[in-house]
Image (cartoon, rainbow, N blue to C red; front, side, top):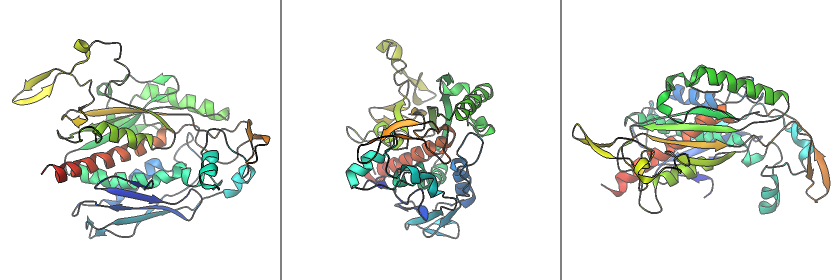
Length: 358
C-alpha cells in the first residue's frame, strides 16, 4: 500500500532510478477530461535532470508514454497507465558504495528492513521516482483547471536567502523566467550564485518551496482524521528530502495573541469572507474558500562530493567519496513535484467531498 497515494484518485508508482523505466497507474480519474499530453510533457520537463547548470548533469529526455485510459484526447474513466524510460543510467558510478552506507541516505534503513538494497542511485528511494508524481499531478491539474482551481509553487528560500512570506507581494507569472524558479529576479540571482558556489565546493544547500492554491471551494476536508491540511502535509512530507511543512502563517505568528491572529469574518457583497488569511485557507481541517498556502522545507541533498566517514555493511570504519551526477540543490526541481502532490490531493479531496456529501 505504500506505493499508492490517494482515496478516490489513486496513483500507484513503480520503478527504480537505474531500472528499465519509471511508471505508474492512475485509477479513479474522472472521465471526459481533456488530456493535453503536451502540457503533461511540459510539466515533466520542469522536473527533468540536466535542465540547467544548477541541477544534476544526468541527461534524460523523460518522455512520457501513455499506455491506457485515454481515447481521442479524453480520459475514459479507466486506469491511466504510463511509463518513462530510463535512458542515461551510469550504474558504474555507484559500484564504490555497494557495500557502504552513505550518510543521511536510505541505504542503512532499506538494508535493515528488507535485507538488501539497490545501491545504484538509491533504487526505489531515488528522487527519480517523483517522475510518476509529476505525471499524475499534471493530469490532476488538467481536471482542476476545469473546476477553476490552480496550483502554483515557487522557490522562496535557498540557504539564508529568502523572500518575504507574503506570496501576494510577488508576480507568480515570473516563476519560470529563471532557473531557480523564484518570482523575485534579484533574489533569484542571489540564489543561483549561492548554489553555484556550493556546487563548486562539492557541497549542497537546502531551502523552502512555497505553494499557493487558488479557487478551492469551501468544504474540502473531513473532521478529525481527514483534515485537508493533514493530507497536504502527508503529501509533501512524502517527497524526497522534505523535512518540514507549515500551512498558513505556521510558526511565524506564534508570538502573536489571538486578537491579532484571528481571521475576522465579514460580509463581502453578500458572500462571507475573512479580512485576513492567517489560517491559510483551512479552518477546522476544512477549506474555507480563501487561498490555501503552505511552505515545504527541503534539506541539503545528502550526496556531496566531499570525502566523509562512514561504515560498511559489516560495520567496519571506512571513508566515502561519492561519484556521479547529483543536484547541488533540490529546490528548482522540487517546485513541480510540490505542485503535483498538491494537485493530486486537492482533486482527491474534491471528489471525496462529492462522494460523501452529495
